[in-house]
Length: 129
Image 1 (cartoon, rainbow, N blue to C red):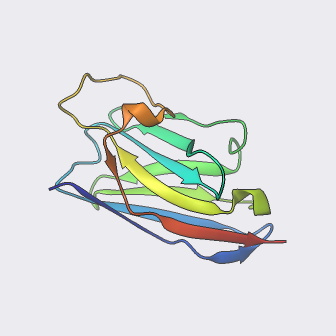
Image 2 (cartoon, rainbow, N blue to C red; image 1 turned 90 degrees about the vertical axis):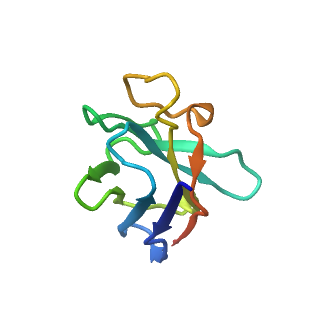
């Protein structure tokens, strides 16, 4: 059974940094498409970083580009999200996501929820002003 376990969420002051981690079980992070999403109360879940792990192609929305960095460590089978210059608008539950490798290979990174099949339970980030 595939499991994605997030960690690293915390309470931090505006301008600070956090590094989230997603450790995968019964799933190889290099096969192939993974991402990070967040959901704040009253808002839809949105993609904040996507990674096509075969080629390390990445995609970010304007809201996180230049501040967030998604990466992988194949040896540790772990996905990371480095978040810098955090603002209160970044406060949300953050989820790790992975695509079923039995589906069509996208060939590129994606921020679409429907492209992913496996989800972690989330780790909470709170940014205070």
